[in-house]
View 1 (tube, rainbow, N blue to C red):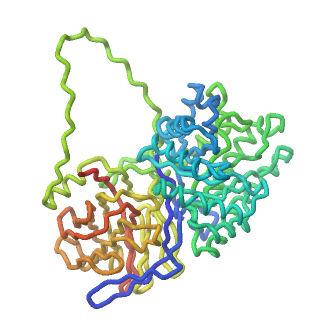
View 2: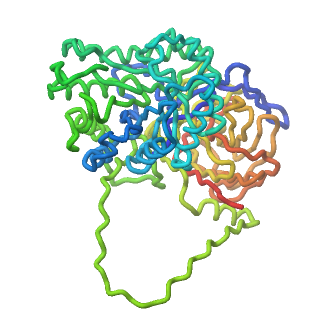
Length: 586
């Protein structure tokens, strides 16, 4: 699995139309980081609090495992490991201290990425003093060596407020270390402040002073301590939604919009013990765990990590590999919320990871040993020589080659997934959201556009293809090579109009514009839009037919997104069946 989020800003930007040139001016101060989603959100405030969100983030199903402890049963017991591999875990938080060895970091990341097939969230602790940057760089590089192109995310600090660290002090160390981390690993998402409970004042001060902003905000939730009654522990689950709502209000007041919320530790008590009469009560554990998970669903929590999978009074897996009551309950809730297979399938069947359209990770099937045949005496086969990639010179050949391989990311866009898409309402009206028909961008204000971004980083050389339907209004399109470090001032935006027009702008000027007969016109028509970025040229295709190539485009990795633009009438555009290919061309 990949990704949890990504940062960038979006409140809408004012679109000014000139007679011959489309110039977009980004309003100063409205470009705000949004983990959106993770901002991406996860966290759109729902008007009716009794209704469940339309889609449940798969990252709600995570846990903590101390994988840098070589004696942890997750590493030493085949039975425990097998149970964890089949528990539908999508994110695993791993404590990583400053003195962690490279080998231990690599083993932990390898275990999560390759054995559990989950997203590693490395919780960086104790990074201070003159060697802080050096240790951080060493840890990040060790993780990257194992993960390769797969995502590893980071949480900075762990309950530092409990030890007396102020929000100002936390923000100061964040500002020292996180920019360097982002420079080492631009695709990584970094979250904080990881407080021991929800603290609105701490969160607000941190967000005001953090540079860069976090990709998501995090804190821990426990409902009681070991001496509390079972009723008290159950009742305080209701506080979690209040905390989430309050946090969104803090974010709205501070930065104009919410970031995704991650509860990076949760359980009924931080000091649960076998002697407290609760952890040994299967009915209580099952009831409390079910209500806690569903409470986080109702609260719109993007990601959560139970504490902890092993070596705890409230583990998910016993030492003999059997699931505990809490493990069984977490597994059951996941399976209840995961979609059932249906006979009808969309035109394209991309892979996604949101729980609303994710297929649960299958149980690995051991490969049977082949029947031994008598050996044959023969010459060894020659080592094959890799065939060099020949990049075609014609646009049709470029399209065929670019879209022929396995996509690095594919999504039906029916629900949130590893793309970490924005889910939000704009202050001037409009929204980015998922419904069953696809990912919707809506803009009701004349001369504005609504950008809806994926909060992960995509390669500089790529091919992107998506089905786009303008259900009402004027225009929509694709955003590529968007640089969130510059407030999205560097990006390319391909617009397709319901009247058959198109243009490509770079936010300073129009690079190309015109109309094409291959564009299906009118409301409700679906066009398959493809854009290929190779070196400094962007190739535009509509309905798999070449339209135009645009030279002199700056080549850099960045975010992608979609948008709706209102040129006189409210516009809603639906996007579905997205594929993105990475082009490893010479």
